[in-house]
Every structure is written in C-alpha cells, then in structure tokens.
Length: 559
Image (tube, rainbow, N blue to C red; front, side, top):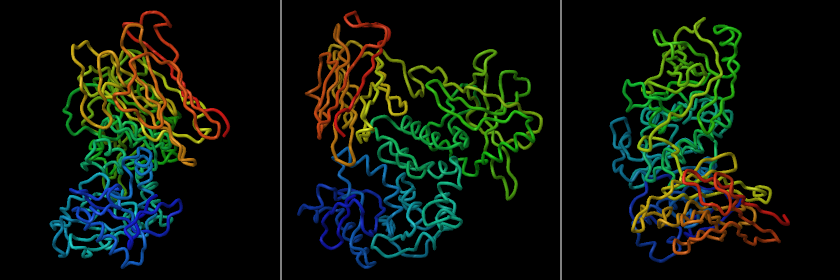
C-alpha cells in the first residue's frame, strides 16, 4: 500500500501501514496520478490543489500520511490495480479518518435535502457508496475545504439522500467499530438497492465497487461488460450466503409480458424497489415452513450451474394457469412496523412433466400475506432462457471452447489478479478454472479493427487473440502472463504464450503452439499445454461445428 507523506509529498510503500487519513472525491480533469506525483510538473496540474488541501487538513489533524486514489495507485500495473480494487473497502475501513471533498459545493450553509450539498455529484457515483459506508470517522468539506459536518451529525440527511439506513452510518447495533451492521444485518437486496441508480466511468466498476460491501473478492476483467461483471458478483455472493433476497428484484423496463428471463438481475438498478426487503434467517424459515407448508422443509442450499439455478422453493399454481406458479423466497418485505409480507416471484414450467422452470413477469414481485396450506416445496431448476444472439444473454454460442485448468498454481503462491478478453470472446468461471468461448470470425477481405482500448487487440481472419491471464505471487512479487488465442488457418488451432508482461499486438502468434514454458524463481517453472478434447482429433480437419480443447497451466518445482 502506497501512502503520501503530508509534508514531503513523497510516496512511501508499507506492508503494515501507520495511521493515515484517506480522501474521497470526484475525479476531474488533470488529476495527479502515480507517475506525476514526484515530477515537477505535478504542481501545475489542476488536481494538485486537491492533493495539497487533503495533506494540509491531515496535518492539522495530526496525521503524517494520506491515501488518495489518484496518486497512490499505480494503474500502469495490472497487479497493483487489481489489488487496490479488491482492497479498497478495507483501506477506507482501516483509515483513521476520511475526508469527503465536494468540489461542486461552494456554500457553507446548513445542509438540507434541497441544498447544494444534497445535490452534489458525489452522491451519484458508484465508488463513493463504499467510501461513505466503510470509514468509522468521516467528515465532509466544501470546495474551499471548509467543514460541512460529519457522517454521524448528518446521518439522517445522508440516509434520505442515499437510502442507506442511518444505523449503518452511525454504527448503532454494530458489535465493533468494523462494519458488522452492513455486512450482517441487512439483506443482499437492501444493499443492492443502495447502489441502484449510481454511475461509474467504466461500466464494470458498477459491480467491482460493490465487492467490499458484500465482503467478496473476484478477478478484475475490464472489457467483460457490466452484465457479466454483475453476474460474477452475484455468483460470488451466493458462495457464502443463503440469502434468497438476491433473487428479489424486478426489471423496471419490463412490461406485462410472459417472456422467460434470467433468475439473476442484469444490473443493480433492478433492486431499486427492494430496499425494504429483509432476509428470513434459516432457522426461522425452517420453522415457518413446517408450520404452514407441511412436513416438506425447503433445502437452504442453492447453486448456479451452466444452465441455470438449482434451488428448493415452495410453489403454488396460479389460478387458471396449470403451468404458471408463484414461488416463495425466504425473504420478506417490511410494509410497516411489525408487519411483513413474504416475497415471491412468478415461474413457468418450461418442460412438460419436469421440474424445470423459467422466470416470467419479471417487472414485479409478489407480496404474499397468507401461505397456509397452499404451497408445496419442490426442488426445481430455473433455467436460463434460450435467447438469440441479439438478446440480452450472458453467454453465446461459439465455434471453439477452451477449458483452462490451473495445476499447482495456488500451492506455489500464485493467484489470478487480472483477466482481459477480446470482444469476440466470452469467459465463464468454474471455481479456479475458466472456460473461453469464441465464435469463428466470418470471412472478410480486410482485417477487422476491434473497438479501441487496453483490452482490445487487432483481430484478423486467420488469428484471433482470446484472453490473457496475469498470475501474481503476493509474497515474492513475481508474476507471469499466459496469453491464449486461436489460429483459424487450415489445420491451425489454439496457440499460447507465457511472458512476464502481456505481449503487444504485433507479437501475437498466427501458428498453432500447443506447449510452452517459462522459468520462475527458485528453480520453479510454469508450463502451458493444449490438448484436443472435442470433435476434432489431432491431424484431422477442424470441426465445422464446434471444437473443444483443454489447456493446462502448471506450476512446479521447489517451493
């Protein structure tokens, strides 16, 4: 972790950081970045005044160090950026004080719901949600660094502006100064509702900015798109939670149609009307089920598969619709003090005489008052609908599939900190392994230039870059990058490379390379190999329909 000294204006790196203040703000033009802060030209940049103001305030409060995201993160390093994104909540939580600098608030009058303070852009951004929630001590400042008030003194107004419960802001009922209130007491749906309507510059950050609030970690993959990033976030939340309010969302753009849709929300905005939904604890749900729904007790576990969601839910047929049902979730909506309604969703049987369903009428949630003797518990599968390429699907049909398995990687201290994919490639996560899916490019007389960006490379008809995976050892600071692709020429196939950094586009291979290696420190070695595992065998013509390959990335040697 890099901290900026408040007097010398020099960055210093710490493993066990001293006491520090931290800044929350809106990014503007000419921010002073990591590469600028030690350069003479930094003092002439527009963002330097903000750095100076933060340092001066920290010095007045008795702190020698501050953390500012603009200049304390080396964004040219994928490892440093991934670490920062996954650690951000903790860094704000561990800071002794957080300064919120509102450069669009010029007056220092009493803040209220109609004031410039309440209308500041800071309250509309994605990252600032965790920056509001995480710190124990937080103070707001206007554009001239005049104090407006603290998070505690303004808790009621802040709750009205952000929908975040005042107990979260003041730590009431928390078992310690850490954020027990947010991480335990409030449902997944409620916390998602806090994020509804917020914006980020990069679409994936709408999901990444919520990792700390849900106490999960996942690789950062800029270029995967907002929907895939938010889908992965929901999968990570499910790994450690029984909270079924994660399915208590409604699509604000949907009408009253019967089209099948996903069991998962596509965006945080789908939870905008779910802020009053509470999780029903597992023991209470079991007692409730036994009392009102007979002896069949719902299983508490549920899991996502490559085809949908396996879950145990109480079902009741809709009147006059033998294949449509209301399914109860183990969560409830608070309608008044002491009064709650059980929340339900609508399902339709998608296969005759089978417990296979799809969600319908996703524009609404059902409020169920009386459940006695009407619902029957079933173990069911809620499938992903079969959608066309033009629809909102997470995964699409392809011509090539690569199953990438990591062997000995974690045992030698390495983990994947960054994954970047080509626009034509889709990535699926299977625990510590990955599946890459890609459609064969159509014939074209000219090379196709994909959208510009750090994660997009030149793609031609005969050779396509698929993805790069950056592996990092947090103890030794060593890293290596595995880049994989497909050569579409006749008798071609997958190719791969292992390098210390991601290779530039002009160094991409166009030939089939099915094995490569790279020497690590202390006698260790990493190898990557490709084996045919699908319709086409070695030496034969590639399948026109679908090719499958397995890729093993193996680290071995002395530890």
